[in-house]
Figure 1: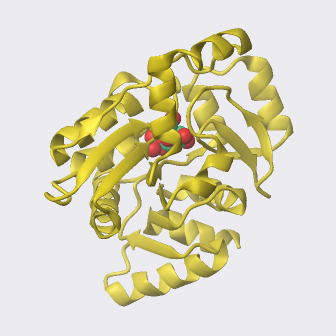
Figure 2: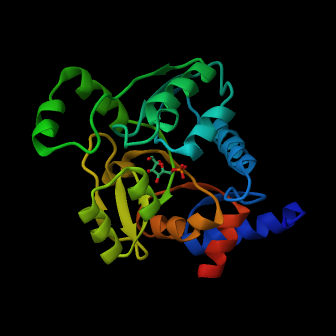
Length: 255
Ligand code: F6P
């Protein structure tokens, strides 16, 4: 069942802004848990908002996942006068090839007529490899670009679903359950009050780096992600949330 009119969605957007304390919220009709086209609608809404944010030179960091893949699919030419560099926000976090940030940045850059960089590092990464790898000049260059991003576009997932998707070791899954992990974003797992209960070690964007970014766009929908979205916004930064009606109504019910 959809709220047929736009007024209903606008009311929902205002309510979500208030509950999550986010500056801007866009709610598209439908529930991406039920229909995959809703994810594409979120993708289109994300691109429409992104167009208004671009400057002359833009470094855009993106994460992986099916939602980000839908954003890439909806990508169109943004502004012919501007320059664009797309970078993966972190090393590939155990996603299927088509949903990896490295593939997504390539698709986005090609559609926009911009450049892209890849980040070939294991994720998760061991402490010893980490120390060696971050001193590699080619890796260092990409990391600097990532940390200097003007815009970050990222997904949010349900903590346990994401842990399973990444074939996380059993002891970590047990810990996530014990600590009531609710959401995951950027390799960080948060509980319902926004505490970081676990973090996957990798290179790329760390939570504190988001403070230096002009715009953080969060794209996540589906009623099954309502709790995860609310949990992420307790702690993580997001200036614009693009979501769907299913998730928005779930967030309202949960508050
Ligand atoms: O693995 C990258 C990532 O952006 C995660 O941080 C996030 O939890 C997940 O993908 C979201 O995936 P999806 O859009 O498929 O739900």
